[in-house]
Image (cartoon, rainbow, N blue to C red; front, side, top):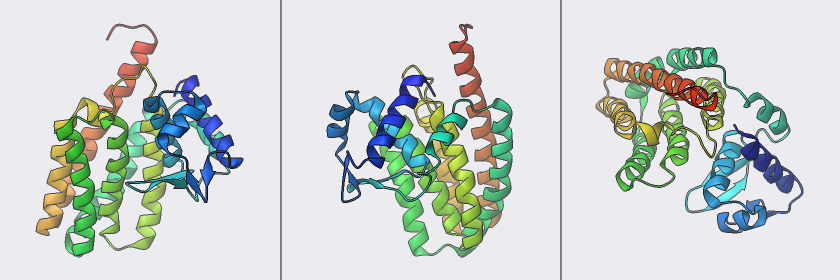
Length: 247
């Protein structure tokens, strides 16, 4: 995370704490916020998504942005932790995600109900729309809907304890990948590999809909392994670029 983005997040956080940019726990519209902080909306949006990953705000589609209930006391410490996401931590995060999400996808295939499938499909549809429209914010919005999709799959396993464990893991991953973003950054996953990532997500969802636990687990593990390799290449490539090494 570059210094300009870190500083904007701090400014937004302080303004939230002081009630400067909220009314009845709802944030001002994005256009007003961009004017308030004198930044481009695209740059503001990256900072807002980072704050959502930290639990400080809650971005609700078609409703607006609201104060969140998590992470507000430790956001500044979290920003310091986000300064560097070590390459060796990537494998550790994905190892943990594989332990959780592989078997969980299998359980979801056996336990999901219509409401679960509607939520899962809704997140997948949002990702499809971003890809088909080549949305200008496909990278940052892709991170957001990716988190919704994976969390919805865990919810479909109907194990509240497992869900609580996964939420912490998901936040760690989301904070890490959002921290990659800078104004000069490499592209995020749904910008750089939209077809591959969407196809993998679609395969997981189809297996869960079909009620095939073995296929669901296999597709989830394959997706996580591919994602680990993609993220490692993204971050290592970005660091080579920032060090002036030709890619």
